[in-house]
Length: 125
Image 1 (cartoon, rainbow, N blue to C red):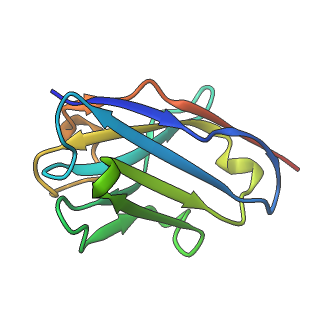
Image 2 (cartoon, rainbow, N blue to C red; image 1 turned 60 degrees about the horizontal axis):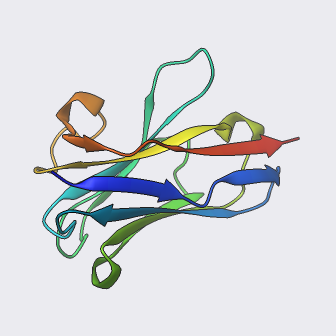
């Protein structure tokens, strides 16, 4: 089992940037694919982005964040980051990172084994 802790959330204005981090402990994150999800009040949790294990050669993004968000790995520090640029009010949500063994159907939350507790991102207009 991998323990995941998200950080980097906050209150920003539309158009600003934030960088979220997902730090792992307990086990190395390098052999796990990692995804970011978000959940806004009254809405279901939705997929944001995912990256393959090891080199992170493949990534996947929700259409709503393509071109604005970038997911990356920092294996030396056992972390995965989500760079969020051009933030919009509709990006407001609690953001969660999650880990899974296989990079397959990554947009489905059910395939992830380990989850963090989330970090709040609020974008004002």
